[in-house]
Length: 379
Ligand SMILES: *Cc1c(COP(=O)(O)O)cnc(C)c1O
Image (tube, rainbow, N blue to C red; front, side, top):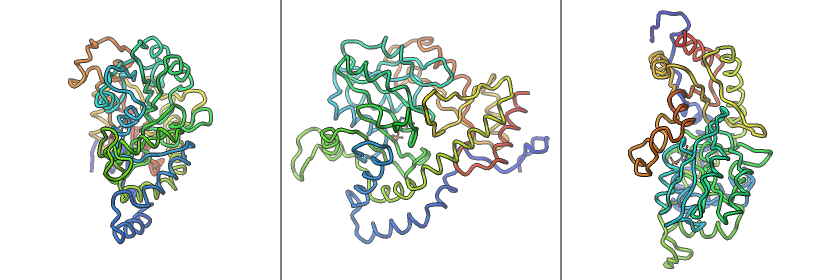
């Protein structure tokens, strides 16, 4: 029992995401599907993988889904499939999970960072992206951060003009739409992650690349499997990064429920809007016009963030920060040479943001307690 001295502030811990509740909904489907995989022992490249790939491409509304080992590999393989590598630059936001930059580096290209827009969405700034283009730019990687799509329609003409590609980082946006089109079907290719905590999560690492191009999909399938289009033929330098049959079973079972889960997340986000809307110190998240947001994360800004976060955590509330350190301030990417102050919007956001617990099964009472503790911490 957590004691804070104020009635209503104490209670059972509230996690950031509740994977146990999610598993309960699919437990039987997963057990049945896994029994089939175990009976056949086709652990790699079983029929479950092809089935999930077809289902997921249809769900997003694009032609092809190529399952891979994780989301970071998905970005790298997408870039390699498009021929982006050594000597090329790829533009991405400074405020993203480090994997976006990592994948660019691993493909052999140079990450060029840009700030996020100062409009409450935290999405990559389109004007800054246009300004960052050089003769070496070959890829633009908008990140559909927190569950809503970036304005990819502003980036496509830019990519066309330079003969480059838009590769969406759709790891946080499964089921989101922009002007009716699925996030993941807005650019030339998209990468997604099925890390357990994503809106569609596997029981381990998994990811996928999406594209409308049959030709690119074929190249991606070759790259993910040792550069091998046919057994014993290795046409290009590939990797070993495959989605396995056990994970595909989990993903198919969860995909059938994803639209309902995303709707529940939206309802929970609206409830937070109401609960927190009248508090002057709290800056609520903003949805870009034309977007259907899937609320991977509900991110607010508060003054004195570190103290507020500690108080939330001390009260058993699994709040977190996504992400406390922008890419250019990580030790791994200090070599890119961006001094502090280069991306003021992203840097200020990193100092003020808090992600509140949000998952499909969260109850009104849980959200009320989160709001109560947050308001009391701000008092
Ligand atoms: C999770 C995530 C990734 C990486 O996915 P992994 O499956 O963990 O490799 C990449 N980009 C963003 C924005 C993510 O949230």
